Amino acid sequence: ICNHLYKYNSIKDMRSRTANWFECKIRYEKTQEDGTQKFVIEAYVVDALSFSEAEERITEEMSSYISGAFEVKDIRKASYGEIFFSDDNTADRWFKTKLEFIMLDEKSGKEKRSGVNYLVHAGTLQGALKNIEKAMGGTPQDYSIASVAETKQMDVFEYKIKESDDKPISIVP
Image 1 (cartoon, rainbow, N blue to C red):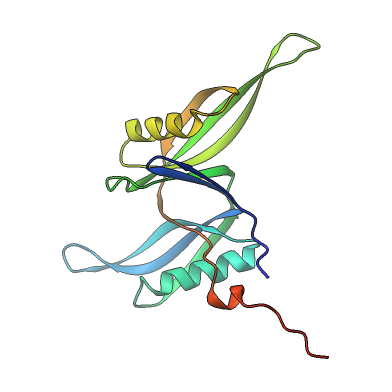
Image 2 (tube, one colour):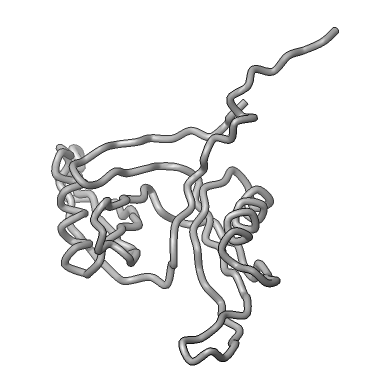
């Protein structure tokens, strides 16, 4: 049984996903452009329900990319409300974007702001701003973009349903 709950939205050339996101740092020996070996630490984001599942998922994902040994150095819960994925071929970076949703307090008549962080896939800072505007274009709520900053995230690994997850569970008495 799959316990992952998702929210998918499709926007032309983009899609968004809400899930439990974890930021993971991996240390491994990488071959540099000049052929020398150097230990590096790279950051990735995975979709998981717990820290132990995040470690299992990042280990599984990285095993197909790294030939030698590697070490999971850090795992922390990510603060992203949603992640916006771009289908644009030039989108090779991830930007942390903070939006402030503006609400009017009916009792006091004052403006209230509520901040939400998003991770946005784009090739440039301007591309990230465009993608946020595309993604938020249909929202009826007023918002402002408080900040956009490039992250060190190398990639985002979404949860994929395995064949064994699809099979019905049989209970034998």
